[in-house]
Length: 321
Image (cartoon, rainbow, N blue to C red; front, side, top):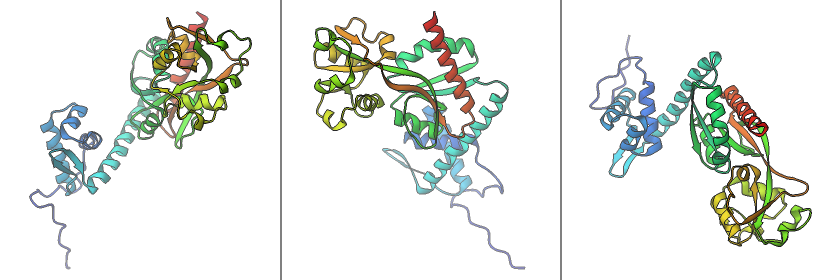
């Protein structure tokens, strides 16, 4: 009977053993290079030497019989086959991590590494309050924190680079589930001698006649403030904006305008020593809800919810104390 000739291997390589499969380590190295754009940065991220990483990638290319990376002076770029391999490798690694977390979590939740993101208007004000309680309740948990804007955090959650993220709700995102934790009130801040600092009941409609300072585009707190105060976004484009809440406080103290700040940040002392007046609105203005978000179908969904409950209890204990 006539037999078909074997598929030739790539020139210069040894024939791959039948049934040989890439290792997770090789796939991790490929993803590291894809995300950093160079062998040196990829090796640093993978915590190995560059020769070790290069050798593993060469073995992976020989095994698959195709070139995955093009090496150049400016770094490493993926071939079309490399892009396909890196995308699939990322999913395989994430599934393997989910398997480990799921099995471990079945017996002991919140043990080992947990990668948590938080937006800049939450991270520096909430986390210092709750981290001691988290460490006390879950001593075997190794929490890795990342601060970034909402869209990038949720993309990292979707791509499984983060297990969960603390964000401000409402925020609609496909493939993301969330648990509301607590409401965060927006308070009026103004220079100490501002006319509204001495008025009686303060309603949000008074802001329509004021120069309102907000965070720059990209911060969800800006959108929440515009929404709850019913201020048109187009009318704020020419206004001065700030990159952080700390900068916003100093701008208000300098007399550039008034603003809205979350109670969470003010309770953490962000305005301490600043020449400003802080007042609540009447009725109270709830600008956002702090929530825990995770990837739909994640093996760590229950742990994300449990961590959220720990945060709520830690805040409650702090206020009771």
